[in-house]
Image 1 (cartoon, rainbow, N blue to C red):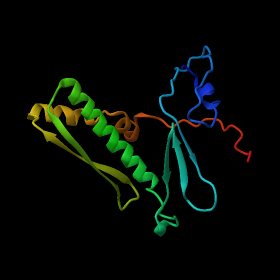
Image 2 (cartoon, rainbow, N blue to C red):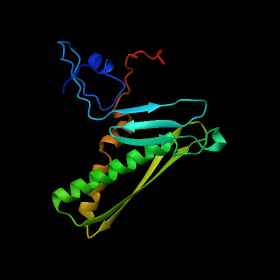
Image 3 (cartoon, rainbow, N blue to C red):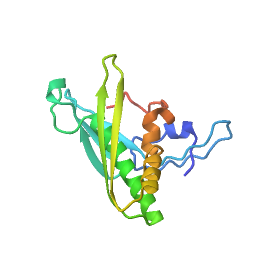
Length: 168
């Protein structure tokens, strides 16, 4: 499926619906959607229902921030995405190389600095009979996983035109 940014913006609200627009001849690069999520907030609380393909998730804020503490926070979801992408990528690479990687543990923290800056800390534990060169290679690969690159600024967030946002 190939779509221009304008065609992507015209897609339905459903992450399950395929985009079936024909690419137009423009100087803009063509993008292919590889994932889509719909996050919906209704009511006065902070709970958000999330649909990612056929999977359902929720997010909320802790009671101390005015939420109901019914689910992880959006930052918790971000860290979950980063940790799972890191673990999956390293597992795939080790399997392809037939390296003896038994377990990958990714410890993540979101820290706020005194000047309102923030950072994410990540510690990766690799369990198995790996030699130092294999460990070093896996840690190097961890710096270039898709979610790592998105979080570190290599992926822009582009505004798409709203499709009937006023409707009920």
